[in-house]
Each structure stands twice: as C-alpha cells, then as structure tokens.
Amino acid sequence: MQIRRDGNRIAVSFRASHLKAAAVVAGVAAGFALFLGVRALGLIPNLNPPDEVGADAATWDAAPRLEVVTDGRPVHGPADAPVTIVEFTDYGCPYCRQHATEVLPLLLTRYGDTLRYVVRHFPIPALTGNAIGAAEAVECAHRQGLFWEYKDALLRRSDELSGDVLRSQAEAVGLDMDRFDRCTTERMARDVVERDILDGWELGVTGTPTFFINGRRFTGRMPLVRMAGYVDLALRR
Image 1: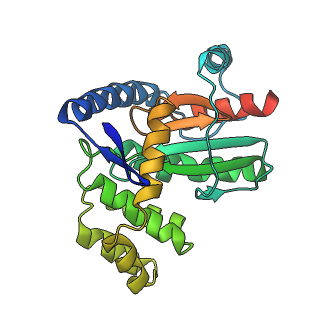
Image 2: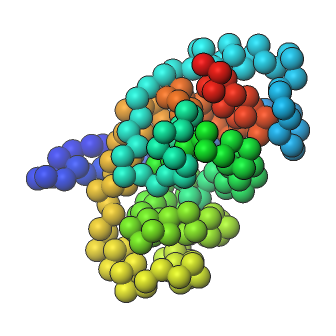
C-alpha cells in the first residue's frame, strides 16, 4: 500500500506485491482461525474447559495492547461498558460473515450492557472484489443511521459486491436512495474509509477479521467459546 498526501487529503493506493502479501497473511490467519473453530462448542458455556482457561490467559497476556480510536464509528452498546471490542472488517470476507451471523449475536445477548462493540473498515481489494466500494457504501448507510441493517444485508451477499448489489441491498433496508446514490457516486465516505485503513495498518492489522478486545489484538475468526473467554478475562481484569 502507498500512502501520500494530495492537498488536504490522504491518498491510498495498493501495490500488487503488497496486496499479495496481505492476502497471504490473511490466509494464514484464517487457516489458523479455522483450526481453532473446530473446537467451538456451538453454545456459550458458563466457563471454558479448565485446560483452556490457562491457555486463554497466557494468550491474553501475550497479545499486543494498543489504543484504538472509536470516535464516530458504528457502535452497539453503552459508552461506559467495561469491555470494548473493535472489529476491523472486510464486507466480502467469509470469516467476517461467519462471525457476524454466528458469534456476534450471541455475544451481544450474553453480555448485554457490559459489552460495547465497534466496527471499523478494512477492505482488502486483493481478496474481495469492489472491497473499497462496499466499505464506502456501508459508511454511507451509517450516515443515514442504518449501519447495522445494511452491513448485515450486505454480508448475506458478500460473494458478490457489485454496484447493483450494493444498491439493491440499500433499497431493501430502506435507505434514502437519492442520498445513498449521491454519497456513493461522489465518494463522500472515502476519507473515513481511508482513515480506517491507515489506522488499521498502524495498529498491525493484516487480515480480517481482526479484533481488539479492550485494546488487545487478535487476528482471525475466533469460535464463540474462545471470544467469550477473552471477554470474561477482560471483565475480571
């Protein structure tokens, strides 16, 4: 990725070699996450099995801890929640879709007001066709107060994020289409998406999904019990 200033804007471009490297790293992370996913129990237990508690605590302590900006980003949960999870996501990423449909709803149900969940964009063009266009479209939906509805609708069509799909899903969730069309055509959300990409790179994000749980970074899809274990650790500490 190349970063340069263009007047008052930050311009981001991607070199093929960088995109290939990002794809390799993301693939490795996704493969490791798939290995972990085999052990998922399908339901959230009250506690992890005893042999996993120690492993989770050791991994938690070893995970890099960073400050992640969340101002103005889509958020679910109260500002004073003791645990904040920030997800960097690509809307064509199958592991992001699995997390959004299989893990996140149960996490929000279990932890309620003790959990604050924030989403930031990290489109990877080498892995997802029209990745940046999709991220900008989601940000346009956020400006109309329908981020979660549009994100979920888009993830259901994440195998094909063409302009027609972006627009049809916007209509499906009830967005003002005149505002949406102007926002996407004029790329009014470009600055926000570029800022998320830049912040992601500075925070060491190399693939999606990447999670920051109270600032501790974890890369790749996590099964439900593993993520719940980390939330429990964050609550205890």
